[in-house]
Length: 126
View 1 (spheres, rainbow, N blue to C red):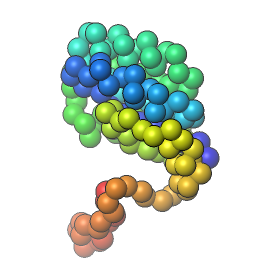
View 2 (view 1 turned 180 degrees about the vertical axis):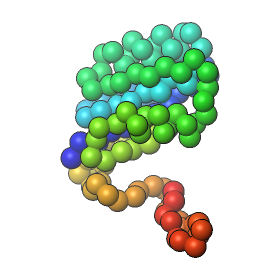
View 3 (view 1 turned 135 degrees about the vertical axis):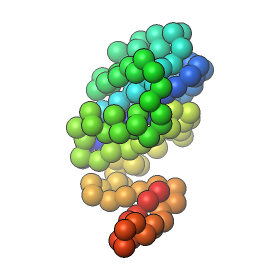
View 4 (view 1 turned 90 degrees about the horizontal axis):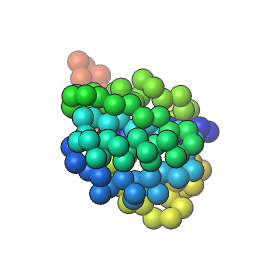
C-alpha cells in the first residue's frame, strides 16, 4: 500500500519543521502545502522537502484556508491511502510503520468517527 501524507503549514511555524519531517521519514509520499508561510518558514520547508524522497512542495502566496489546502494536497496525491496530518506532529518512533501495516484503502480512520445526516443520507466524518 502506498500512503500519501498531506500537511498544510501556515504562518510562522518554522520551529515545527524538524519534528514534522522526522515523523514522516519513510513515507511513500509527503505533500507539503505552504499556505503563505513567512519567508524563513517557506525557505525551511522548501529545503526540508527537497531532502525527503517522495516529497512534493506546493506554495500558496495567499492563505487559502486549512480545508482548501488539504483539498489541494488531495488533488496532488497518488497514494492508495491518504492521511491528513497536522503540521505540529511529533510522533513516537515506529508510528508510521504501524499506520502502513494497519490502514487499508477504502476505510475512514480518525481520532473520532461519527455520522452526520446530510440531505437524507448518513455520512461518516472525523
